[in-house]
Length: 499
Image (cartoon, rainbow, N blue to C red; front, side, top):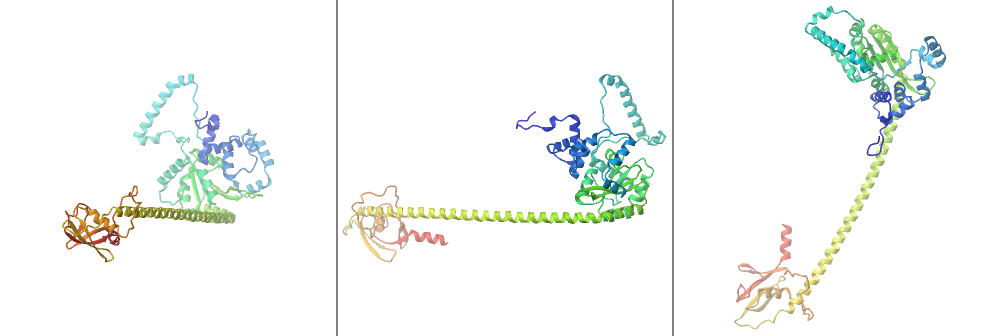
């Protein structure tokens, strides 16, 4: 089935067993299903092999390895003989030296619930109801009267625990351990699954101590109290930064780890570290030492010290190689960062130059337009002055219907002129504004779209009074005579800007 975008979900074409294998693989490796399906297909949908290849790399023929892993197990004698004949010499050397490959474990459900046929389910339904009611009654009875629990028949079958995720299982084990032996033991338990602890040890090139216990074993309590929580053991684990993962075989994951490590006696401890495979440069996780059964603190420390001293040199060499690779990577990243910073600086300078050029072009264009507007304004002003000068009447003779006006110009020059009593005050402004303008007979009309502004004002000083360009001469302060001073409006604008 395709979604609206046109892509196909690869999980919809898988069978139920393949989907279960995909869920187990992604739960351990945190890979996306589209990336996990090809690896599972190359491993013939064997989750254990796929996880081993994910963490250790595909160093062998994946199809042949998967077929060999899924083949039926031969009889014990034949299996022993064939394993002896098929084992290469370097693997025998590794086994004799006490080093075995560390297993990859995928948490499996403790049990698979199967639904009975419908007819059988109908027949046993009344009995299942009676069993549940009776079991609930006895559970409530022993809860209300806990002292009666000692009279219950002893059994070696442990009650199955509810299946949880590896992280939750680890948290439950740590909580029960701290409730039993105290929260101040100082043991750095890893709060996660075995696969995550193994991957962390491989990534950080550290030792991993796996401790497996059985709650029903008689030596578990003494081992935890006398050996595992011993101050010397705790100090040794913390000083060497050992990753500590522990679990009870009552849990599914710890049980599978114990089976993979061939654990036959509890309590059990195994130290795992990165070791080079014989005859190749491939690095893999291996069990470098193990302790089965009750172990004294000194013996446990001695075994771990011997294993650490044996493999510390190879780990130091791997750390040095990784440090060189990390340094080279850091140098490359710094060079790339410097190059990107240089490119960014170049882009910023180019952008700044472009913006400066655009700003200069805009300023030049604005200046050009302002100059053109100023030139057109001055041309219109001169044309208006010529037109208005052509309209000024001749100075009338002195008489009772004339006003004598004395005007002092801005340069100190004083002019005296007579104006008719019925003339407009605007005529006085026109006389001052058109001084020095040559008359042009062609100026018969003012410029179109131009509104003239005088640019000055006429002021009487004693007392100071501004003469507005409105009304008649006889109606204002010009009659019958007046002394006026020309003040430029541009000077007032400059004074306001300075303030």
